[in-house]
Length: 355
Image (cartoon, rainbow, N blue to C red):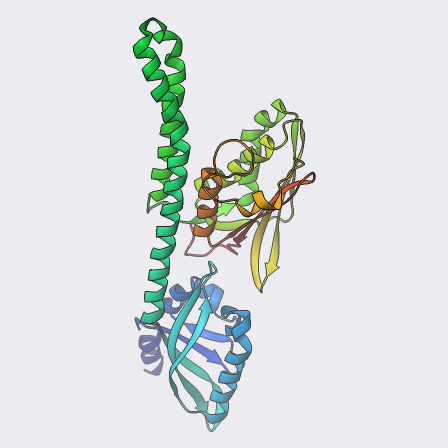
């Protein structure tokens, strides 16, 4: 009877519930709680609860738990911040009920809900971010399309005046139209709301695919690629086609930055950063490098890692990495080359939330 009642209260409750033992380890939890933090139940049970909190919040949370154990009185209308599997913060309101037997503290049962205010703030933040990205992308698209459109306009006027030259210039017109089509397709794909269905992505395999794709282009400029992959499990949650686009864009920029040849070093490894496992990828070229002024303007629509073209590719890359809860950093020095660093969340062992 008691077991059935416990099962109904915890597992069938639509609210997020979890049980902590006296050492603040997660003794049990329901699916709603697992979904709240983005892990499977198997990954949660037995884990110290503090691991689901930001590093800066852990000491205060432990003090509150110790206070609950000492007073053994229910706590209501409390709030805390947890860290989702994919790195973003989840702000919740919760109540905690101490569990005791014959005066001895055994642990606590907690019930939580995501705070509506925090959810609203996050939605507004997302909308604001989205508008900013759309504004930047629109500027990038306009900048990148303007050149081929100018060419088309000029050739159209020329062909009206010189109709006998038409066949000779058709190839040029087709190339410019194809360039416009490429830019528009990139923009449309990026706006697709369905692309962010994440699966487990093997970064090692992805790098090998990109190197195989770009190596012939590199060899034409006497650019060689040196790949070093540290560790067997370099898996991230992501959209493989879009991550491949980011990697390809970075490699292409690096090749273009070394017109006289050189080495492109590609390294990938797992690191612990701020208490969380990450997969870090480094792309380091031996190009001419960039001044600090150019470095500060990277990501603006009219800038990219090489001198040719615009910054739309890099802008899209930054947006894709951000959508993966990752970071993109560029370091460069004139005469020494450029290093692009990608930091992505580690997917961990296979779990039900990722295919």
